[in-house]
Structures are given as C-alpha cells and as structure tokens.
Length: 408
Image (cartoon, rainbow, N blue to C red; front, top):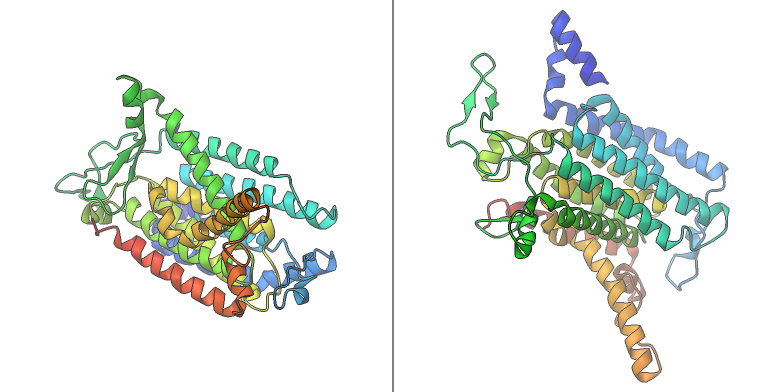
C-alpha cells in the first residue's frame, strides 16, 4: 500500500524522499525492521492473550529432561510470525506481483491448516490433531495452485542467457533487458557447469511435440516439494528455538538467491538465470526473517511460547515455494539439510523398527528416539547445546549453498 502511495506522491508532487520506495533494498530493510518490532513488541501481548485463553501445550511424557516443566506453555505462536510477515508485506510490496500473490496465499493457506491442527489438539483434546490425510490434501491443493501459477501465469518468465552487453535507459541509467524473457520449466542443478535441467525434457521419451504438457511433470514436483519441506519443518519443531533459528538461516540464504535472480546485473555477473519480477520476493523474505528472529526472542530456551503447527507448517510451505520460485529447489537437500536429516531419522527409525519386528519378533531402533534432536537429548545433551550446534551446521550448509553460485 505504501509503495503505491509514495509512487503517486513522487509522480505527481515530487516529494523529496518518496523515490526511496522504488528501491527493493530500502523496502526490504524497512520490512525487516517493521516485522522485527512487531514480533518483539506485540509478540508478548499475543503470548499473554494465548495464556489467558489457556492455549497451552499438552506434553506427552517421553522421558526427556525438562519436558514436564514445559506443560502449559502457550502454543500457536506461529500467529506471531504470520502477522509479523503479512503486515510489512502488505504495506511495502507490489501486491500485484505474481510472486507476492503466491507467497501470500501460501502463508495464509498453510497458516489455516496449521491453526486447525493446533485447535483440534488444544480445544478438542485430541493429541493427533488434524488427520494426516487432510493435511496432505491441503498441501496438495496448495501445490496445485503454486505449480499452476508458476507454469501458466504470463508474468513468470526467465532468461537463461543475457545479452553480452547490457543496454541502459538514457535518462535514468537503469539496466534494461531488451532480449525477450521466456516461459520455461528449467531449474538449476548445483555443482554442474551447464547446470540447467528442463522438466519438460522428461516428456521427450514419449515423442516430440509433448512439451506443451510439461505441467504434468512440473506440478507434481511442486506438490512433492511443498509436502516434503513443510512436513520436514514440522518434525524439526521439537525443542526450543530449533525450527525458528534453522528456518531463519535457510530463508536468509534464499533471500540472497532471490536478490541475485531478480537483478539483471548480478544475474549477468554470476551467470545465473535472470527471473524478472522475482526481486520483489526479497521484501517478503526480509519481513519473514524479521518475524522469525522476533519470535526467537520468546522461543529460545526456556521458551515462553511454541510456534505449533500454525508456525511450522507455514514456515515449511514458504521455504518450499521460495526455493521453487527462484529455481533452486534442487538445492533444498543441501540448504534445508537439517529438515532432511530430521525427516530421514523418522523414516529410518520407523522402517527399521517394522523390519526387525517382522524378522525377529521384536522391534529394534537405530536411534534412541526420533526425530534426531530427541536422540541427542536422550544421549544427555542439553537442548540449548543441541540447538546451537544444529544452527552451526545450518550456517555451514547455507554457505555451501551460496558457494554453488560459482562452484561448478
């Protein structure tokens, strides 16, 4: 809203300073500040409200140190992250930007699914929450929407090879891409020199002329990524500060990719896909990071609030959509390695338990408990140490992910 207001003021009244709102960097910084202030200042009020409404976490006794003391801690704190993100985004972005529309729908949709899940757990006293098939259905629905928008919307384009010499507007000196950007289903493969993978190429085995139906490949991939990452974030949310801190690192890294991909000069210098209009996502990312950091103010050990599925499912969905939008989804196993390992620990634990029970008549375990962070708790590590070390690993993975821009 403010973007359009100051654009109008600059155009018709030439007010000094109004032109600052044309710069993504300025709006991103402002979005981060507004989000951080909202989450820290109003976050406490939201926590107090949740306490008054007795929206407390019901803890199952799993034999973990310090677990019983957490009973009654307010949950649904993901509302803080969501509001802290949406308010500056609505104020400072171009609302009609296709990527902003997709991210707003993702935030609200996944927030609703997570809220329903938490509501059932807390007020219906059903520890299972929303049935798994309904969660999956919600994620599939979002995946269809995101995939269809990214595939069919005319504003979602890219340019793999930029002109050898950029051309500039004579009046403003702003670089302009005169070469036509095109619709494409290509994505980036890390560590390879000619690092483009075209999903449409998978249809070539059935004969030529079928590339117009590439959405049959692209949309299911989007669905799979959104489902996997959102569930991975959900599993990671198990100890104070782990999910929020790890997610902030991941999202900040995706912000760098969005900035680079949406800026013709950086895209040209780093020889990456130029994605017109994607730079606007940087503002959303700045607001989202501000919300996560502000939430951490209350979520670090000992947590005053838990994000619940309201937060974790939303975080995972946003990360997935951001990665897909900047065509870096194949980097998710590296960048979101924490989520991946947490997911794998559960899958391996369950599979091994069932296999050994069938073979030996007694179920055996690989880990003392899954997800992985609980294994370390069972091993005697304090949760603050576990979280800090997971963050350190997350930072290392983020650096490795950024390095892939030139490491080919």
